[in-house]
Length: 490
Image (cartoon, rainbow, N blue to C red):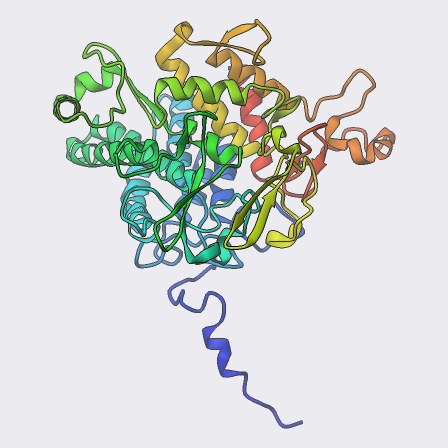
């Protein structure tokens, strides 16, 4: 046969614009079925668990995605193997500070060089996000995929109905979390190198504007917060300016809780320039009646930065601890059980909808093998538990909630975090009959002497009974259960 040249179109296919990408490294992707493969946000969570075993390996793995042969010249981090140009939640800064603190607790000294290297490159990535994913320039972020697959009423990666823009509460929350992570890193470095203090001020100011945008107190805006229903919702903005709230009660609306940072008074005392600027910023906003991210301010106490105002935080925590909504026997569901009654909305003559699906997905969005419409996902639960502990660092026993909601069993937020952790750990523990909830679908196979102690770390878990769903071999971010076990016993 006469050889033919490959088609010219191959030069313009998927990932063709990533001319500098060179993936010649050994990557941690504990997924024997799909390997070789990577996803940037999966890997960040993997590194947090790996740090329990090997700090150096975890740091090197996390640093890889900031290298010039991965990160694009404009600062974008490749999302995942199938489409580098898609967007995953920016959790690399969160992972960096987690790893730094874990090593610090274990050895008595954190790796400041690692923290600086991550910070310098992630500053480029943060700028890419601000320039790329805020098309209306109002600090409310869009973004397409954002890692939560089919959680919305329509596929966010394939265009928005009516040619509009979807302002996503989860996109804005991810950026607020990113902002606070960068602020926390900058503050830690500033304690040893005061040239980073200016960057701490930069991220503090940016967080203020993001928080104001999400909570929308300006007269010309319709708030992302629904005062009557007590929840944050995405907003669809049509070309004619009409704004339509998408009233889906999902972890997207709860994610705003994860953007929280308690700045210790001891830290502020060592950084008087940062403290003075923060004080000025707050005074200016009080005088101009602008939105405040520091509601309970005392110059002699810790400072709490939270994306969610205190009154709204109370409402969201009641929802997250409500067993008829988000709190399941084995963790926090990704979609409220209230959506057992299907939610539907009409946009330009087309009907879109979503309903609570505790296990396998009934839609083929993103291949249909991944479902965020009800199941329990370990990494998101871990983020929520971490945020509850951070709130507790500030409020202590002054802030308690019934656990579960309506139970007349008040606990502080640290205790609640531990109780949710126990539910997640319970996915893998034997019950009184010797069965593990994770094995519910094939529990008879695990009565065999040779397989009774085989535990598979599934991708996600049934929102009703905790059984493993999705990729049975996805032993990456589900390994965060090991971190929960360690933290309970610390």
